Image (tube, rainbow, N blue to C red; front, side):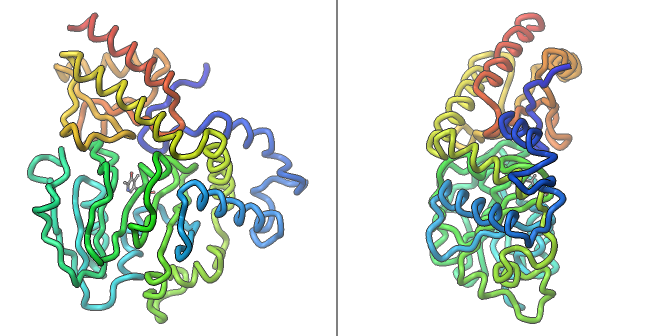
Length: 360
Ligand SMILES: *Cc1c(COP(=O)(O)O)cnc(C)c1O
């Protein structure tokens, strides 16, 4: 057996160079004479790794002063609940822009803590677009506006950062962070589970503006408080050290690739190759409005459902892994995160062409 091209939406492919390096230094890491998994998170070696990883992500995303970077646990889902606990005062409401299943879940998890207003949603059209900005019903007194820049399941992505006035903008970037440059200064809080574009599951990266950190109530459990975690450099308790280490390798890898401008060019080229082929094929179909098509997750259907099973079996046999669409949508989905090379997308398109020829 050999490694295939992995199109899984999450957990997702990691850069091969990163896996190679992790393997090479698994037993003895960087002079520690032990594995990175076996040393104290408070020792100087790991503390240096943590500091370097923060410098690297700050450089990659050009994070301006006035923001803290946190490396926490719980997955993005736990932070759906934790965000309102930290940045909404009792009795306040928060606005949610819902463009897919993750935004829906984020709103549901926030509900026990904050008054949730759905300020805009594209549910009526099966989450195939981003509701026009003029139709959003934003409350200028909201604690924050939450949205999902890339909806992983339906493959719907914002190409620009929405203007929400003076209300802090909160973004679940789990499936798009580090795929292109962003203007961090437009956000109050950015968070992302690591298992799509950062590294391995079990780590969540948060970028939080200082004025929002100051909102964490003093009487909340410390372990859930972003302000406490920031004050303790994300080491209030034992962090996910191996996940943090893998993330640090991915950040270095990204810098070596030329940073996020280079990644954006590569990601655009990958997505264009796949969408152009799908649109021209007369066989496959992507349901998302062209202006909102994700660079990271590309769902597509075949002309007959009966073709799904053979498509999956044959693609898997050809070394193209995990193309099955999400159960909520059906069909196929190719996730083409940073770690997917252009050659992998080309291999997928070649396979799709051949499959269409044989089944058209
Ligand atoms: C995968 C994903 C999540 C869920 O992440 P967990 O780490 O499983 O909680 C949340 N939001 C988006 C956009 C995702 O892609």
